[in-house]
Length: 375
Image 1 (tube, rainbow, N blue to C red):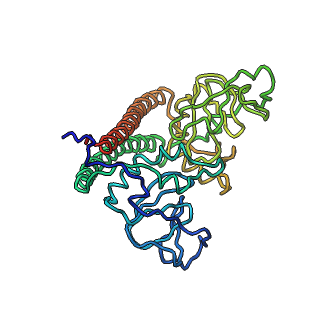
Image 2 (cartoon, helix red, strand yellow):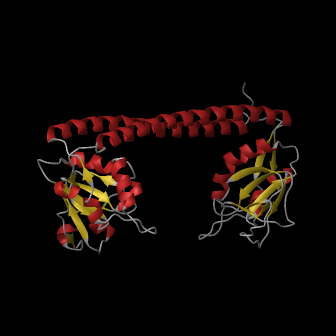
Image 3 (cartoon, one colour):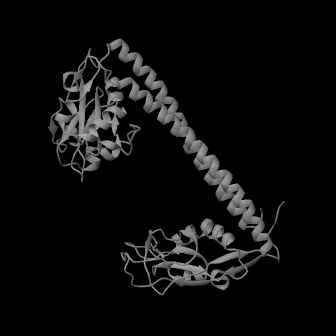
């Protein structure tokens, strides 16, 4: 049924249909004796004071994540840059929440002040104009949107679950492939792999046109290289390793992030990345890549990384890893299977991302229709 805006719908300022207050200027955010939830624009604390709200309320971030909206019912307190909306006149709180959550953020982002800590003044919220349909219409719209959003949320969770299941299957297969069975003959990684590159000066003209790969350029758990630039473009000055397409790049910083790449070009990499070269005719490059990617190696790397502030895998620990090494032909078969499974996992990830975008667009479309009287 198509509902167009008519005389039953009014346009009012936010300040006309609710009371807009702010929290306290000075609060002891760490007070351990607090008994009520205490809200800031960033997170929830507890703090006990006489200044609190008891009714249904909407909270709007006046700085930080400017314009974000949340709902709360019960006694609580708030920081001064959190705007608190109460005493709703002719408005269903849930309707107003959905409306502001869908429309407010984009609007206030264009009117926020300050650079270091952007914020909005209360006057901007007070004057913010919103469509106000009759109460029966508000209840009808809320029911439709809640049911639709629940379905959208379920669809997103189902898609994400499919992707997570595929990733878990891939990681389980990796673990099984690289698990060292009892009684198996093993070798040290140092026996079949080395770092042959030396640090070079990236300011040297012969390195200026080479692509540079730093830890930030390797996506966690995917190996995808992003935002690549040349040494000249990045204006590099500190020593870097030269690598080529025969090498695997392993980021030694925070090994739990699993940042590993197998480039198909020659370039420079950060000194915090190990350019690993596998011994030919013994260990193929792609088998080394999946070995380092496996949960088995990651768990080993984490245990030996130390330095709580900045976990880092040192060379000795890296090369002391024990592995079972199958024949070259078997390595190739294993890599082919892993490439195929990784490809299917990647497809599911892309489907998940695409569906997430489409579902969010559907949500925005429903909100637009609802608040323009077309739902």
